[in-house]
Amino acid sequence: MKYLPFILLFTSLSVFSQKYTRQDTLRGAITPERAWWDLTHYDLSVDVDPDAKLILGTNIITYTVLEEGMEELQIDLQSPMEITLATQDGISLKIRSEGDAHFIKLKKKQYQGDNNQLIVGFEGKPRVAKKAPWDGGFTWSKDNAGRPFIATANQGIGASVWWPNKDHNYDEVDSLDMHVTVPKELVDVSNGRLVGIDSTAISKTYHWTVKNPINSYGVNLNIGNYIRFSQTYQGEKGPLDMDFWVIKENEEKAKEQFKQAPLMMEAFEHWFGPYPFYEDSYKLVEAPYLGMEHQSSVTYGNKYQNGYLGRDLSGTGWGLKFDFIIIHESGHEWFANNITSKDVADLWIHESFTNYSESLFLDYHYGKEAATEYVIGTRKNIQNDEPIIGTYDVRKTGSGGDMYYKGGNLLHMLRMITQDDELWRSTLRGLNAEFCHETVTTKQIENYLSLHLGRNLKYVFNQYLRSTKIPVLEYQKSKNKVSFRYINAVRNFDMPIQLLINGERQWVSPTTQWKTFKADGKIKTIKIANDFYVDLKKINP
Image (cartoon, rainbow, N blue to C red; front, side):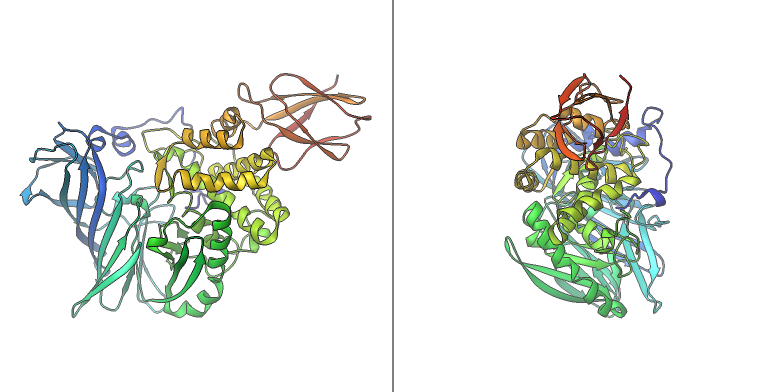
């Protein structure tokens, strides 16, 4: 999802002055009514009426009981959508609603280890997205021929904007089936593989199945006059089906522009490891909005051009060498869909790594210098408006823009500090292996990087993830000596850095205490290498 500085749709609020409500807690916390059961399967059926802009359906929720003694189960569904029924083993159940959280009173005794099912019916006219994907919901659009062109996008607002589910990242469902009914002249494209189409005189029902764990916001509908073309990519785990679904009139443009998809796959399998969802295939699906990282069903609306709607976000020229939406949104298959943050406060895990993936795509195909210029070029978009990490348990993310650009630059600095590109690559691949199909916390990612890079990065993360300060290297020089320390920094900040001393690169290890470096000759000029997001300040002796 794109929270870019020039198109932000919200005003940043200080996490210290923000007031949270009971609804924020019900949405953002692992409540007791969520904690006692573990999702295993959704069987979601949805009937879509484009003319009435109405949907109705059922969700059969299969779960495992983790803890006995609980009698209520929390399901989320946002107004104006309504839950029409809840049953278990054919018995109707009472529903106690508190805003958009619905607590279903169970009659059946819940025994630890049991696998039970709950059927939830729903219907209504779901919220219309005002400007997808930033303002989420349904997009009821038309293609150029006047036919319905419909899609869902709901990362920020949550999947419960249109279907009932356990709407919290911490518990991903293990597998998913979707049955989407649309008028017979239309096609639905959703997650996973298409396993069947049932037809009547007036409608078609598309059955999609997902074999891997999937986060709820990654579940999507795409409905339109689609055609499909395909290719097979020979990847690290064998043949991978790559399917491309586009509005019929755009087929030729798509066949040319989407040649970048296998180039993306080649680069990202090199840097991050095997594509995480071979069983579910890879799809790139045209959408009536810019695009989003729906798992195995990446949506695309970049108007068949390179850059971000034709713009280079780095200002270096390198951003026009690739289609931003194809590369960025597909990068989320590794960071967001394979590795998912437990709490949206840690959404930087999705966006910082995926922002950085853009430069790694360039690195693979154009070289390290191109990648470096690009990521440094994006630094101009950093705002330092609030910390990158948000507030836990209330569904509050950190800085909408900085989790992209500042986070991407943080990762570039870690690569530089590592001074070993193969170690850096093996660490990125190791992350995707260690946390494959898991939900994680920032601490887990920090600890993994520190361990495998062989350096305590605690204070580096504190500086760039938990503070809005730009660290300043304060220095004074005299003949062949330079003394330096960090100011405007968090306590114990200790990041190694490269200085350009008389134009020559020199590693030094500043802290918040004064240190001295002695050169071989007189020091005439001192600069900080551009790779580091650190300011420089000279003081007189």
